[in-house]
Length: 160
Image (cartoon, rainbow, N blue to C red):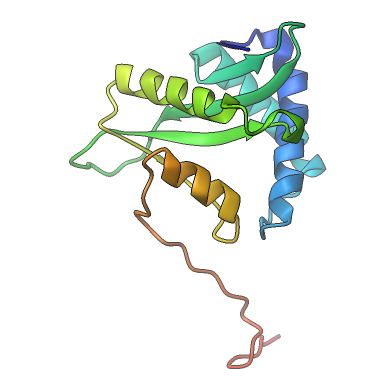
């Protein structure tokens, strides 16, 4: 298995992997719709490929079985650290548990550190226990907690 930068010509395969990731995340409460986001994800991945913010795991037969997308954190606020963000990390289920995810994560972290990051952050859906365990094994700890609720519940009713 090789961890390498993809070519722009790989963008359709990467978009397909992102759609697989988004489908998987629906089981954990994600609101992202896989297919309707394919084209915007494809465009974003293209930009990240050009700027060096994507790495892929390639098999000996050159198949892409996983990817990581990352970038320095943007924003208008001044912070006391420079943060890099792991935006997406995905390994096809039939290639998991062999270290590919860890290799992708490690390489992306190194790229972010080389670009000046003092910290690396990422988001994971709260019900996704397997992903939370994976990131904990790699030294990630909770930093923020996002809370969500529907306006229609036992305490409130949605007004029309």
